[in-house]
Length: 353
Image 1 (cartoon, rainbow, N blue to C red):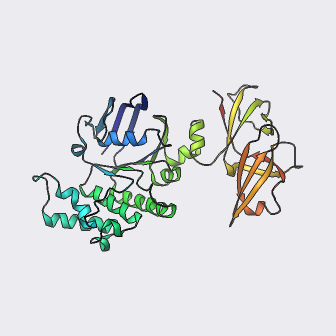
Image 2 (cartoon, rainbow, N blue to C red):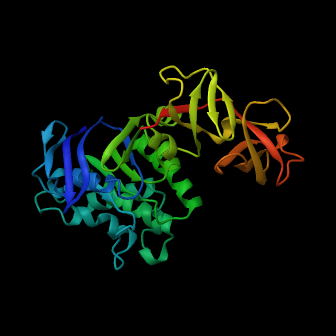
Image 3 (tube, rainbow, N blue to C red):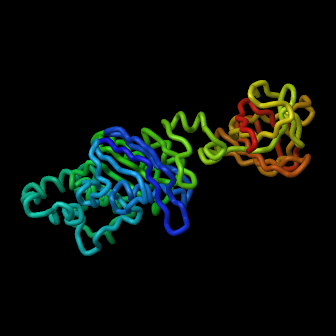
């Protein structure tokens, strides 16, 4: 099942939530709508589902215009963040609910319902819990019941609105791996809303990064992480150090020091730019080792097995905070208050607006 979103816009009063959104999702694809709170991702999901109407634009499922159809007629499965399970129904009956409330002419018989629900509970690894009630389950188990219930009606599209948002970090990590495996088995076209960049990068075939009601960037997880298209994308997709600089011959001038760099084509000498460096792309050098780099003071050193995180602040000009990730073997003897030079191996430059 393919999804085509054409020129979708939406406002709530004077607040523009979506602005001329165009998006194509291929059959069997798992797409994440990623972005900060208030960027419009949940509203877009609800418009695709038919739970919300747009002010303009069209929605097509497999080439059929469904803009004026309600959610039931679009045959979509929807999974909410807070499960939305029926507390008075058992796990089995929660999953069976969507089948039992179908119109009589479409409703399967009891044997078919039993087989379908049993099969789904096996898939989500909850067959042994079929007679329990939601209050007797963990958060992760409840969310798997909610997913099984959404799949029971054999949806053409599966829509998930921050399904793991109410769970702790360890359970979230386990469930996103489980969801990816399940999707690879079922190949249901799926759209997954999240504000967690790790979740989006790990689960998705395609990441759609949203900001202020617009699509900022779309691509594979590898592409959007390695090649962020805008300053917002660079800052949102992973930890990053950011500082201002002036382009000069042979590099970048900052109050904290000179950064040698040759890849500045398209940026005129004297122009103001914003520089982005990932924490793992800085090298730490002694203060007396050379003259290039950003001079910074060590604030804190944290070691975790084979890796270390060093927090620093520039000591010249306006204070700028930096974070460096490196092998723990590089930080013995490095202490709070020490001064070092930060020299990037890789960086990205964006012209100031």
